[in-house]
Image 1 (spheres, rainbow, N blue to C red):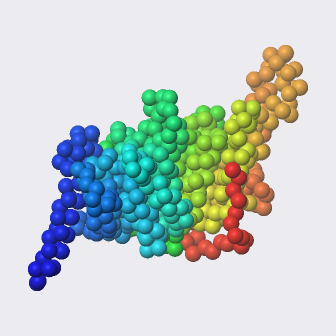
Image 2 (cartoon, one colour):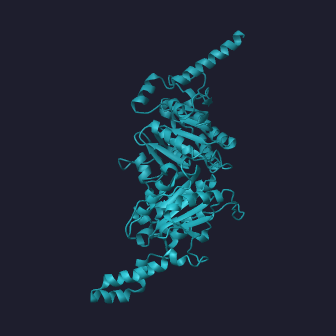
Image 3 (tube, one colour):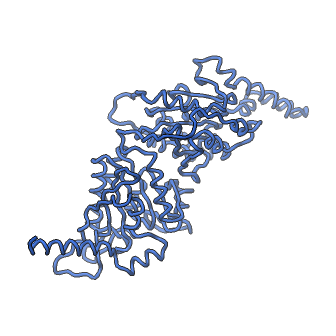
Length: 516
């Protein structure tokens, strides 16, 4: 090998050593003191050993030859490339806080834009790890990287629904870049170090934190107590997704009997319909090995969403939770449900809806919050859903929520109901008050109000029971079959198998227009 090649290889080796040193030992030590892994350590934990192939390693902040700086800029603050995660090919990038506080410059931001496009074109998931102080500021150039961020945002929008995208906010993420994690399909935040904020004054102690975005803004899907936990959650989440929109999630061999009857299901529901129960108890009893991967658990908890498997088949679950606000479909729960539906449909993941709700809440407070508009999103979303759809009605299925949770005429592939199921345009109690108000007023004067009220309610409840309405199979309120609760698991498994090769098409159109 000639001396001329030795010189080039020496330069390449120097570049690699600079990359491994990141922002220098002091900056690395500071990163560790904050309880954070470095950008490269994060990728090493995410990727299967020895599979990370870096792209753009020689990139540096562009400086004219005559301009020197004591600030190192390996990778221009972005480490990125290809890797395998549990044997699956992904694209990943990680912003390096040890390099100028992770601020994005002209070159680093274009690296991310290019990688997002590559992930879309190569049809593989994209994982972004954020730890950045925001736009880099230069005395000569002003705010650096603003042009490139537009292309990052555009590429994230263009490849939405084509490849799964997961964002991990493990440090600060502010300014225009804060939109990227929210444009991703799922956002995981470190509860101790993650901070997401667009800009403007901060008026509360928890503003921008993981807890803030989980419980208040609804933008965070999962919280973790450390970088390690966040990365492990990302790896688990990825297991429920296909490589791209043209594939299906991989089914696995399950040791859990698909025909398992669960006696404990008979004891979950209370004897009186006015009492509540936690729908998680039912979910845990029917899914494979009792493993339910819940998303946004602390936001709008009256709607439960997440992933599970039935006989190894990945399934998305959306369930009303009577234990929270009686499972009502208020604006936040509607938004939570709507976005989940879109993801399932994009990536060929079956939907299991579990219905027990008193419907959309009436009244001035909810109308001011746009309950109609938010609920209309669910109507639109379910109507355009072409993936496998199975509905299980547990108890109450009232009003408009009956429709958005997969009523028979909305086109679920299979709809089952427990014998406790009640279909009604509104709750029996409200109907009694509306229809028999004169009789009740008289009864109140005569001292037998409670007895008369319960008498009317019991009559209507019997009328609304699926055991009564089910006699008219073609009626709007119906199920394909009333089932023994203990058979729920086996019925769902058989329905998923039967609908595996379904073909459902919506009318041709350029695009649809969803309610705002």
